[in-house]
Image 1 (cartoon, rainbow, N blue to C red):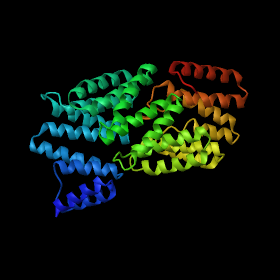
Image 2 (cartoon, rainbow, N blue to C red):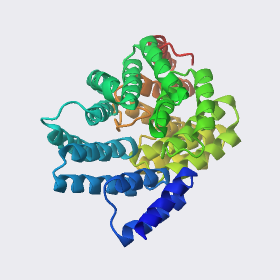
Image 3 (cartoon, one colour):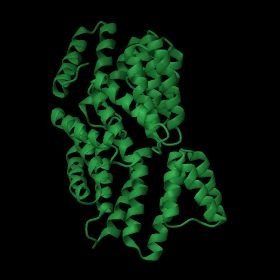
Image 4 (cartoon, rainbow, N blue to C red):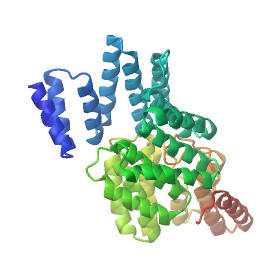
Length: 391
């Protein structure tokens, strides 16, 4: 019976029917616990079906089975997968670092393999999400070097990761050049779906962070055309958030709100603290629409999951006429940044500080404090020059 159910699940997955494939695999697993390649298959299907908990559990079981069998290389590979999904989707750094250490231990004494390449990818993103771009770049180079020899997908992700480290560190043109090189791998179809989705997502994220919205819009459209039916988990929802931001900036706020609401629905099963990111975009859209109450609700919801709701919440306070509270909120956000690990907005960057300064200009003008507005505007201008921003 199990073989039949697994075969049916593979057929359903081949048609892009991920929920059906997931249900069939769960039935098969309940009948007789899955093992080996079938557990890896369950992990991939679970991710495509929006069940990141199933994905992580499947890789944890695969790790335990490999340890029991004495297959240290497979045990390390499963540990890397656990760390990668925890990192990209939950950004809960303590368990991520624990699984990284476990993978390193099981790789001791082994020649370089694709597992080493993917471990370097994970170590890179652990540092990138924490705002340590110099160390992140070191691990990205490791991923490229090892991946070039044995795993093109790991090498491609390494190039994307190095590019983002360069951009976030202020070496914008060099970073964008590497991003364009990685994008070629994505559009050529030479990568697996998840790696392709990560490349697209990172490219759009970098461009929007630099306020290069025309290019970001082009790549978002390409990502939209590609992503349908692909088993890429949270990439679907992340794509929607990027699209919502572009729609808001183009003035199509009703359409943007629809996209942001769908993004929140799609990302809810995946993200933890970073779930505040689509919520704050929803708040910004509603603020633009004049829905002050709805905007405040979204920003407060973002705060509840551990995300920094600023500058949105301060702008709500300004819209309500409480200029003093808005000024205090922005000042506190600038003086005491909430450095939440994030793939979209890594901490310790001038790009993360820029929206706060933009809001400070607006609030300071409303408060009649033109000296403060001038200082904040000068800092914004410096950041725009450093990063070649068009905003």
